Image (cartoon, rainbow, N blue to C red; front, top):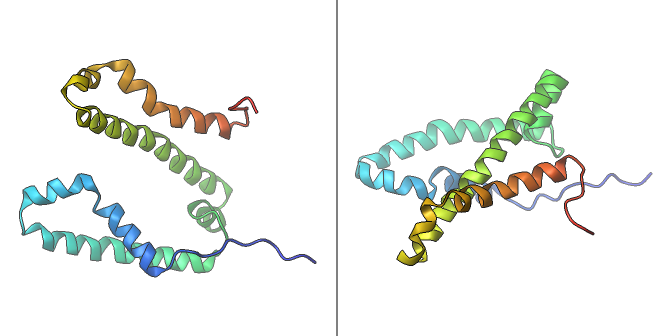
Length: 152
């Protein structure tokens, strides 16, 4: 009987720890921390200990319990049933569907001001700011629904 294909574990503990730190201390929080002063370093360390450590323990436990691919969906489905699994997946997907355009809008805003004063008018242009950020989401929803997205 042929062996079932498995995912290779390419990220180690160091990689995942640094990834989590990068997600928690993203570029948007650096200015907030700087505005708060040096006293906020203790708060950042406490937040990392009180949030990241329990999260790491929970993820490690669930990953050991369910080693297959699927993450949150598999964990919820196997422990609570198909409906909570589906609901977990759907809420997660919707969160990502709204996060991607927000990140794209953020990048567009930075790009407009980085290009210089001659492009500053684009920051107030509704068609420029509302079209491109939603393109990845509409593309993802079209491919998720099974329709063709390109003339292949």
